Image (cartoon, rainbow, N blue to C red; front, side):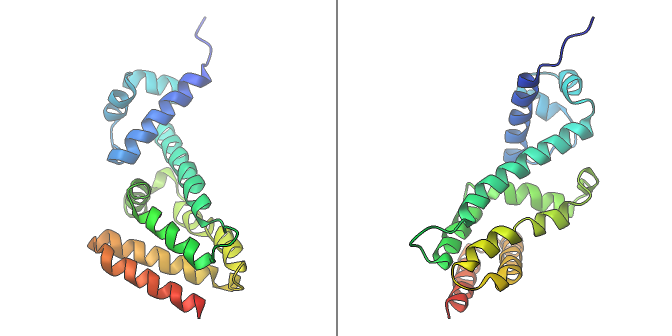
Length: 181
């Protein structure tokens, strides 16, 4: 008779694998994840079935963390103009707490790993439109959600390519002023 599933162990392993992948990128082999979790590749397979299932679970867990963190940043705050909220969100997204997500999902967007999440590019775009529209509604600009998202995504790609935080931060501030006008 085999062991019964232990979901709490699987969840703990998934969290540790996600932490490792956010810090170091998504590995192409299981050994780095096994070392990060203090277990063996065989035990990871036992709990997740296959390498691809584990990697999909890691991506899904990281994505949920990003949605929770960035979603909270994009939420309108009473008494704060939404453009100020967006400026604070930009600073967090591009700062130390946001960079692991940007790095991981930027790599996913540009790599052969995308077959692990075939619809990623569409989902990673459209899931931000609702929160942005909700926030922009507070300043009567909900119709600008696609534009704001496009500017954010474009500046994030620029920042990733050039590492020029001064220029991209200034460009974002200039864009926000146009929303206030």
